[in-house]
Image (tube, rainbow, N blue to C red; front, side, top):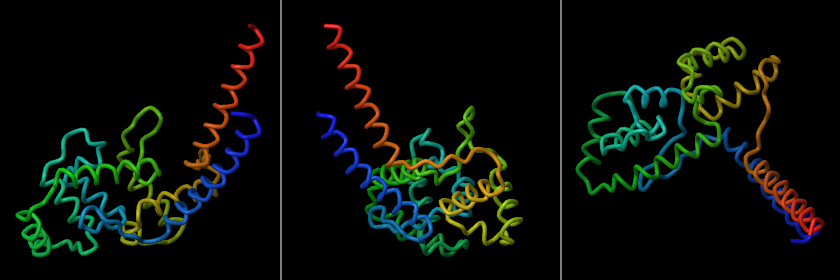
Length: 212
């Protein structure tokens, strides 16, 4: 690929990638539901994350163990827009969905992909560089920071979508001048890395031609 053609492609791809990054960043502040099969799934809030963690959901652990049908139904109930923390509502959901023809293995794969995408977007809590597990005190740190700076109640913080909570915490850290808050643009960075790799590849090929 000629240098001019390569640069033209890079500029076009970068413009498209920046637009995707912009849309995804804006989407963080919208309460949207997605479809997993025929089920509606709400945004993963701090409260829902803690409920799934309490249920030992394998979907939060990088799928280190194979999910069961119960794990799938548990996830779909906790993440349902109709979720209520009472036995009667849970029982009704289970009776409606447990004995029906449920392709739960297919749903498990879709849920796993949803979680993987959330991790890639920085939605789920992540560990430090030396430890892939999230800090056991991340909830307390989030509540303390948001309550102190924004005067939000604990319940308001628990009902925040994790993606939005993470965005607020990054902004808060940047404003207070804390740890390094380098911003990553997933799609734009991917295009830039590809472009640099192509330039390096062309440079290496040119050196090789000169030697021969």
